[in-house]
Length: 321
Image (cartoon, rainbow, N blue to C red; front, top):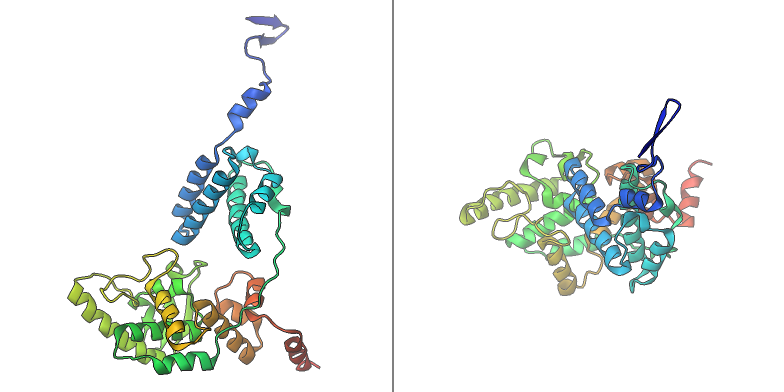
């Protein structure tokens, strides 16, 4: 039915203003639908497999634990209730919260959420200071390895790369022979192997050049024997990449075995990177240089790696007096 009033036509059966029910029906988006779209965007944007895996896992945790299905039903209170219901440490809760916030941020950027209500949702965490590996720790491990054994050769080379170049295990696992120039003693890492997608050029020590040269030759023998076609620097005993597992890989597992076998407690890739950061900072007094070498996008992350004590700060300030 249409009534005419002046120059306007008003359709009584289809009013201009939608009802609340119609508005809710039109605007509501399922969290799973939003997640699928976000993941597609991340894949196109070149996000790491591990990052995509974390998004998918954490968002499904939220749906499972809260029973909330629609994006518009998520509130600060529902997020806090979700966190309260977790039987995990606060550090784990914080990690999950950061990931979930990042997902909501992408939803906001896509226009599916009207405001960032999650900004003030926080968790108090007392950070435990994690010590970095020391020269003594690394030298002890390197001295007990058998370099005629392929796994010891591979793992020892990876340990040195982490400790003297500050590389993550993810970067090490994705390294290809084309990234290494043994003649110039340099690493030319492109964004494909870096967590922050930014390339990095690093020098290599004589010891690393020697070990990498031997490792590359051994890799050729193994790949030929098992008929594998890849150019990864770090491979398994059967010639496969070590990067096929999102949460761990064969090198990390071997380092855990060394910890039990030799009683060296501070040999993890995080500890090795922290040791690298501390050594570089002690030599350079340049936190920006350390941050760049670690490929950090945020200086606050670098300071957590360094864990500068009050005495350290005082000692550094004396140089300027």
